[in-house]
Length: 299
Image 1: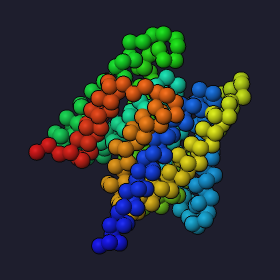
Image 2 (image 1 turned 45 degrees about the vertical axis):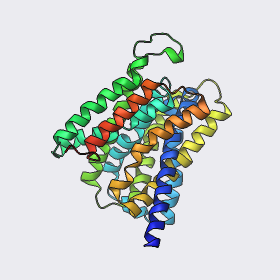
Image 3 (image 1 turned 120 degrees about the vertical axis):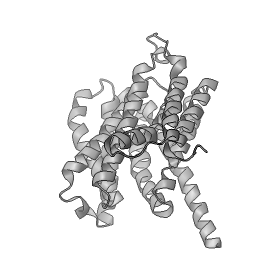
Image 4 (image 1 turned 180 degrees about the horizontal axis):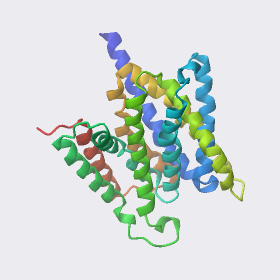
């Protein structure tokens, strides 16, 4: 019994660590994307993660796991990495790290919608109510900035960046269902490495058209390195450990913790303001996600 409690305690600590790492990724995007540009910043991020994860693949002797699956791997790489990473990078040009991390939490909602239309999964009444509540929360979250038209950073209209972040979450939802359908038996580490490698191959040629005129600052360079090594490479390894220890359902609960850390890091290191409307919107979104995924069930 004592060993089991110790095991659960360790897993809980790792869950919080993973949430804090993924929450920090939005802070790093907020710092690096304006100087590198979203495309080049993402290409650097995926290249670093690809090198790290491929090294792990070699270490664990799983390089053969992707043989004959590269067409599907490229689809996952596009939907789970290349497109959403660039979209989130674009969103952080205007939205705060905290706001973007909360919008990322809508991913399970889009996953449920895609599963309903594509895989014909059942969408309960509670889940439908959850979707409506969640999207209303998105409106609350960004409503303060929807009317701004100033050309200054803080005054940019939030509509397009918000739509970009939600499109990124939709890509994650599609990717999750595609993975469920086509990659049930594949090693998670192999899938992660393959998706980062394929995303890098897609983004590097395109990024050559987005070379910045000025050399990025040290802060931006460090952001690119840290988001690639820690927030992508190490985070994937940690996530797969949690799946093995807790199972997929409990491991995915990290989604609910990421916004808290995204808001916290943005406030501590970037001086972002935490407004009451933002907090209410974030809580409403998480309530909607909890209803949609069945964490909270209507009696």
